[in-house]
Image (cartoon, rainbow, N blue to C red; front, top):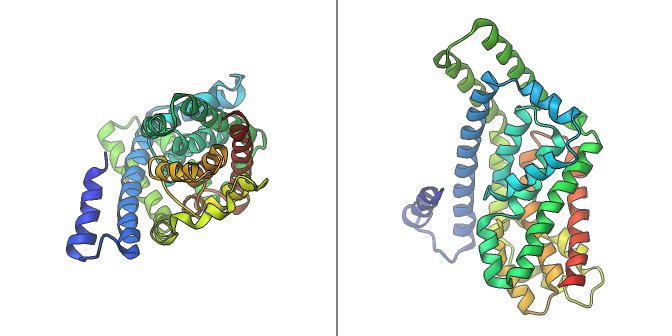
Length: 325
């Protein structure tokens, strides 16, 4: 979907700037240009669409329904399954997360999506089958969905809404004021669009510095951290290899399809597959660039709780993988 963005990034880095494809700087800059452009496009499209939906749809009723009705966890499972069909990395999932929050969807449900979306998608599934076989793929996909569902439910029980930033609360207040104004004045779709677009620009303006800083960090890590850096900490004789692999993976940043070849190499070198998969989950599901993007939406305490719950879940999954695979 974003191949044209990649072509533009390649053209700027390799043709205009004439950087070598083998250089770390070229790799980091290419990554920065591609991911920044892609995420900004996603932000504009998703927030604009959510603005249109919010202008007509009573999101407060949806919020109240999902918060008060006993759906026995189905809402978290649905969000996780939706994450499976959205082929985004952790940073690219943030725009949808912001759209969900803006639309009044409960925080735990949005977390379920945010966790599963980078972990499991159709591209990763296809590669996983080719590299590790159908059994391992089914276990991985099932565990990814369960991880998102359970973590979302746990985070919802903690009632963390109070740890959202004032910026998010202002966005929600503005959305509700706009909805009331649209209803009272019975404005046509054409008259609503400029108001919706103005809100989109305000949101983009607020989050743009975090996008640039976050992706810049991701680009530096993507270009300069050597692939073999972590192998010494993942040997099969190390009892703490799974938590070490999970924690050390956080500084890295990649999508599932990008990290899978590295996982294959790790397994070929004798690293237990559960440890390697835990490493992969942490790379694609948790990252410092993602934390930078989320900082505009969450306080540091909420980011810490989110990362802590997901990290613990990944570590448990890694040990289980090592037992059954």
